[in-house]
Each structure stands twice: as C-alpha cells, then as structure tokens.
Amino acid sequence: MKKICKYISVLMIILLVLPTIFLASCKTLSDGGKMSIVCSTFAQYDFTMNILGDASDKFEVSYLLESGTDMHSYSNSISVSDKVRILSCDLFICIGGNSEKWIDELLDDDAAKGVKVIKLIECVGEPVCTSGDAHEDHGHTHAHECDEHIWLSPKRAIMMCDAICDAICELDKENADIYTENYRENYKKELEKLDNDFENTVSSAKLAHIVFADRFPFVYLTNDYNIGYSAAFEGCSTETSATYETVVRLVNDINEKNIKVLMILERGGTDIADTLIKESGRNDITVMKMISMQNVSRNDIDGGMSYISAMYENLEVLGKAMN
Ligand SMILES: [Zn+2]
Image (tube, rainbow, N blue to C red):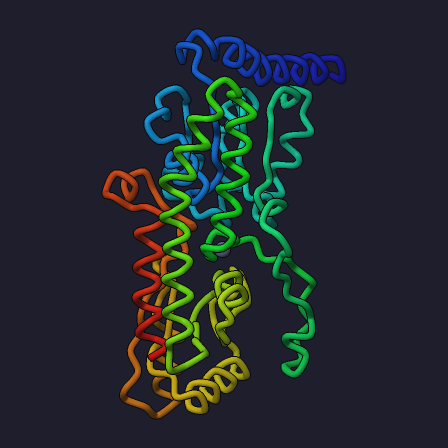
C-alpha cells in the first residue's frame, strides 16, 4: 500500500511539474521572442504600459487581476497558469505588501531563479504603518501592520514609476534611452501635474479632515498630503460591520468637524454611512465614492479606466468633501 502511495505521489509531481517546464521552455517560441513582464495589480500595469509607450509591443505585458479579482482575495484563487506565467517571465512587478505574501512562497521555487522581481513597496520611501496606539482608547489591540496601498498617493506613484522605468531599462539596456525619455517627457509630467493638483486642492480646502464610512486604503494619500481622517476600519480590514464604539467615534467626528460628505469605496455598501447619517441627526450629508483600484478588470481597462483618470475622479470627490 505504501508503495502504491509513493508511486501516486511521484506521478502527481510529474504531472504538475512537467507542463511548467514545457511551457517555460516554449516561451520564446510562442511569443515571438518578446520579453515578458507580469504585473500583480492594476496601478503598476497601467504605469508599465505608459512608461513603455509606443514600445509596448516589444514586450508581453500581463496583469494578474484582469478578471476583476480583488487583490486581497487573489491568493486564494491563483491558478496554475498564473504561476507558470510568473515563473517564466523576465520581470515580475509586484507591490510586496501583506496581500502578496504568496509571492515569497512562489519565488522560493527553484523554477523562479531567472525571474527578476521588483517589490514596489521597497521603492517608495517610508511605509505608513498602523500601530496598536491608534485604537488604544477603544480597547482594541491591532498588530503593527504596514499599509500596502501605496499607489493611492500620487507622490508614491511617481516613485513607483521611477523604479519601474529603471527596471525596464535594466531589462532592455539597448533601448533604455527610449523608455527613459518617454517616461520623463510624458507620463512623469502627467503624474507631477496630478500631484500638484492634489496639493492645490488640499491647501485651498476649508476642511482638513475626511470621514470614511468603509475600509480605508487611502492612508498614503492622507499622510502625504496632510489630510486628517476618521475611518470605520483601518486599511482593508475583513471586518464589515462597525461596532457601537466606531459609530459613536465617527458621529462625534462628523458633527465636531462639520463633515458634509461621507466616503465609501467604489464597491462599498452604504450600510455604515446610512447608520452614521441617521445617528448624527443631520440631513445635509451625502455619500460619495473614492476609487481604490484594487479590483480593476480587463473590461474596465478596455472601457478607458486609467490610473490618472481614476485619481482625477478621486480629486473631485476630495474637493467636494473638504469644502
Ligand atoms: Zn486594500
């Protein structure tokens, strides 16, 4: 019996590993010798395409979450073909935060030896981390955790693009000048304008505080542009219902700071916002959506979704919420 089990497990390993090796070795035949870049989330996919510009057809650039899967649940649904795609690519551009712990395991594999990886969270300066202190007065203890939603601050987006541009230039040294010039003359200027527009909106705003009746992935934005915030949950907590203490805390902030707009995420529900409006006894509060870009699908991209357009929509909401 033991022997049969051993046979079966060896057979299983062969069946699992063989297609990986086969596909990896076929790479240069099937894609016409193009170098391949794999991006884990939408922001760096969009950044990469813009940095490459007209030269993007020299690369096979793919985006792992294109079915619209949320970045926080992707690790439960990663397919064998996605793993092969990563293990056989030339450059893998990931965020490297808590939701991507699966990447370290995958890259431990011997098959990953030729893959160049950049973790953008290591390229954007000091991380913003929450500590237990933030919730001390509510009796909660939260583990010290660094936020991973770095792209939601245009300042960090520029640092992400600088790092991506460097990695692409390293990958294709011959054409490095083309990528560098394209990025500096075009996309980087657009991002710098976006950064300036955020600075101007925030510095001329009447209010200095926003309230999120939802999960809160915008801590890099509030940190980098000096905006105060209150949120139902820190980061992308899996909690979905607010405690009594949270409701009291947010209602106090809404009334004390005369908040007129409650923010939620693009796929968020209005349950908490409705409760807050009711409990605050106010009838002049509206609910508006901010786009976090954590679950952008290929359909959204084909429909014109871009990092810059989404951030300008966010800026418009921010302008309304802070005035
Ligand atoms: Zn998130």
